[in-house]
Image 1: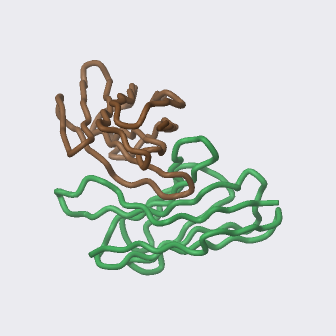
Image 2: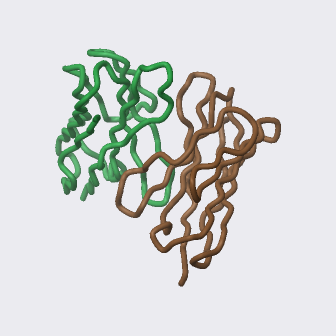
Image 3: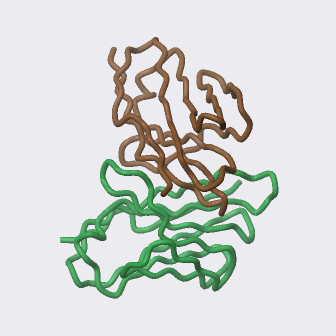
Length: 114
Length: 109
């Protein structure tokens, strides 16, 4: 069965510090991978998605970046965090199987920028 | 622009039935999803509709009318564990998911 991991679970960082969040998927090959952010009481905002190694599409221009160094690894980074970067960060995957429709989410990282 | 509308909050009684509505205006339509999200946790998939009509899955059912840009999630025999937020999402013409802000459902004994 497929499993998706995210770490860390919670993070408190000062403004201006760097960020690195990691997501890995087990039990599937060549998945589509996604990074979302969810502000308190809001819907999910798609930040980045990837259809393969080294292929990143950015949905929202901001001070975040993403990389996919391996097939099942997706990393979200920032060089300098802003207060507005606080939120619940979710990684998700979807199979490329023609029958696959839904996305599956990791447990999330709650980031507080102080 | 693209828009998904859901009520912000609903309250229902344990054992009762509740209907959560979702209306959408998107550039294209390639399916509608409902997810459940308990507080502090990740969303989990509930249902998918791409054709008009009702899809039933146990205590949960989801309905879609593409001509009206409308869907609802029906929860029967409510249990306390159903207290959660319910997210509606539409896959647009670019096959990206557009998400609603979610409906917080409060179940009272």
